[in-house]
View 1 (cartoon, rainbow, N blue to C red):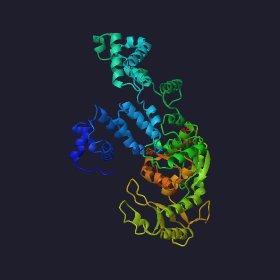
View 2: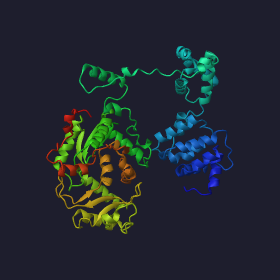
View 3: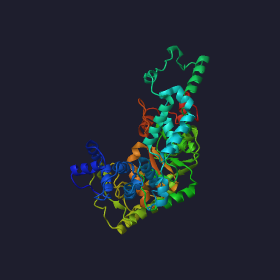
Length: 539
């Protein structure tokens, strides 16, 4: 749906929802949100007169609805206009219900209304009794702290007990009963709270580098003082809130199709609902401290959820891969204290990846292109004149690529998709007349990262595809490709890449330093850090 009309018209429409002129102007700056609101307003009868707060509920629904639920926007708006969703709490519950059932095209109205508390009325008497019970339970502390008592804890507890009660009514009743208990505020209540007493500098805990009894004691004190914090990666990852297995559709940006529900159910049946992650390094260089972070996040998260983590070698570039890197990577993972659930290779799936590429061509979603690598570089390359060639011709040319009948660099297979960053039609396959360390000379076409990554994740039933932020721009192709092939689609999550000042965190640069500078003094293991006091298994 495209927005039509002048900015003044749109501002006027937004104001009918109860927004101020300034808020309407600010909202209009958000093109995606404005589009959603205008779509919602198209479902409102022209002669409809909003009840008090009703328009703001429509606005709330539009600001918080996920893309996966957008097809239910009309259903949501109609329930607001019919006063079935008459509070912000009910709108929130409706959004959660629709997101949870996002794979279903139809809504079970009875279940929806039950989940949203439609028709449930909480009387003033019920609010009064619930507030009285909670205050009585905390009476001793309230009298002791008087008006410094944090009533937020009471309100949170009451909202849990009175789910569909009006929040303002609960707050007013708490204020009334607090006043009845404590009376008017005294001068002491109104005075600023006393400042926390600072400890003398001499009492500050200092951990010494010398192994004296005092240093050991200080270290114990420091450990005790941070006991509430995580003491290991596994413990830290327990506090990370990703989606639950099988609830992929509840994450932002996940693309839902009419096959999603079936595919997720089949995935859960295969995995038993376990968390499955993977660490997928390219075996073409030395691992560095940045990889230690990736290893800990992938293995640590799986371990924290009693799941499994694969070690998958992304071996799709035979000219740069060496056996020593395969061995070194496995040693590093084990040195950090982890044991892979299974060691796999992208090359394990070469035949399946090829068959899927053929399927893409048959569905007119991929084509053989003869542009050179230089012609495809940058964000504004010339469109390929071969993009719309006939399917049969593409199938024959791709077969010729596979059989070695086309020179290296003379053709690639490209996917028909534009990435977030603007890159058009990323390459799926290229020709390389180089024997592979595992498959020998069986193949002379090799898949790219953009093509291989998500498909291998799907084959291995990965639940959480965890990668650094630099791959965020590939998320659209990740979801597009899985859905184009109608296969299970994992969820890609990104985390910040580790950069360390005054050192090198790059496989390419480290490799060059090893080759040209430190080749006589290089220890090819993370365990070379042992001499600095880091012990094996301290990941």
